[in-house]
Length: 621
Image 1 (cartoon, one colour):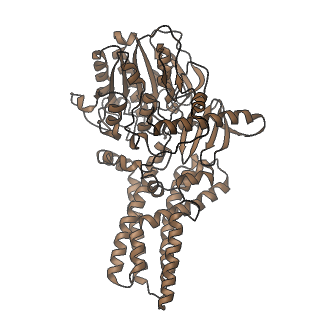
Image 2 (cartoon, rainbow, N blue to C red):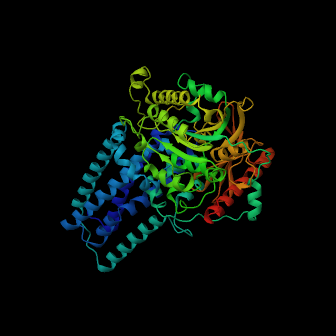
Image 3 (cartoon, rainbow, N blue to C red):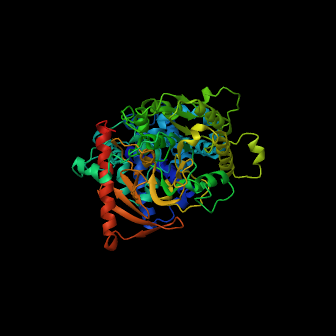
């Protein structure tokens, strides 16, 4: 039997754990290879090298009790082995749950989940059964990884025999272990510990989530830290660059009713009029958007529904590692469209077929939009809950009835829920759509039929004839893979405005727009003529860039057809892409004839970042 110095033995155990997490990363790469395939081979090598570091950090932190027990007590004692093994199983199981759960979440969020995982834990019990049904293989992988690791770890502990050493050598070995493990935990000896936002500067940005892991991401996004206030310009200059202060010139304020329709996961890829590759699933939406002011290059300002609500209704983009609603700023006073129109005599309401407690929607709405919140508990008819709440074909007609009762003018918002995992399609639609085998396409068709039903209920109402309806998806999603995987398509959502009876307001628009531009566009159309401020701009004016946050300090600023990748850690532009008519991208030079574009987009990105960081810290939105 081989005898070990304790330091070598602990390093051996660490190496075994690293192998398991390497397998996790290989699984991640295999499942989402199409999203990374365009990166050069050398960048993959870098990503896996950085991955070893992030894995080591996660392993030492999450298994820290195990390492301390093994370091300071005699491993040959049965009690020591039992305690160490118990702590190992707890920590290793958590690591596996976090990493493997992201194999299901990554297609939705397009990023590793962090501290927001703790915020959505209350939603897990209600949906656990459906997730396990669709992702049963992840449960098998979890059991397999933990069981095999348990057997290996137990065998290693049982077979351990220490080399007899003098006291001095034992102390030296202990110091070596502490030094190496502390060095790994810190990620080296730079001016600060290694963090997620260090990764994009070391690997291709597209591979940052391959190089990271979910436990590592969670560790560094748990704290509710304040966002750093940037000072690229004088404050008034930064606000001038992005046009933060608004005052539209208008002689008449048309007090039309306003309705925001936020479509769960109904991204650009899933709508026929915006994606010729998918036909027959969205005939109603195709007709609706073709007869409205629809923007081909609409962009989400976040990756989740909880990002979309602040963006669309309050003009607050997702510029932080945690979702705005889960940060210390969530109680800020935000002067957005509801508060602006409320002063003009508007009533407000929000409709969502799920529970008020879902992702903290109610808390956000109470502060930022309205206390008139209608959810599944307000729906008083019998229904079978097959997903997140009341199915759309039932809840949307209920909303139509409630809108009829609202005092006019009103500003209301509706969030649908059906086009979301587990993609439930209730009867009689399940039988009606039985020929569609793909669950996502079937859910797309069902949602389209539900929207058609909703509009059939409201089209003859008086309020509808005097209204503007703003439509957007909450975020993009995965599962059809009809678009090239690139950083523009990753945020592409439909954004459209339907002004009933206005035939001059129904043209397809070839310009960039994002969710934070929606309510300024609505106010501009209404002729609102009082001063207000917003990060977003009216899309009725000249074209302007949109900005998205990718995470770890990297921003994408897009002004069709160009998108610039800007790293706020290094304060440099990393890449310039040109968006082609077939929704592919071409990387173009940052210098030469494109220097003016790079300089302008960099300047605007810095201004957006500075104004956001200053205003959110000062509670001046």
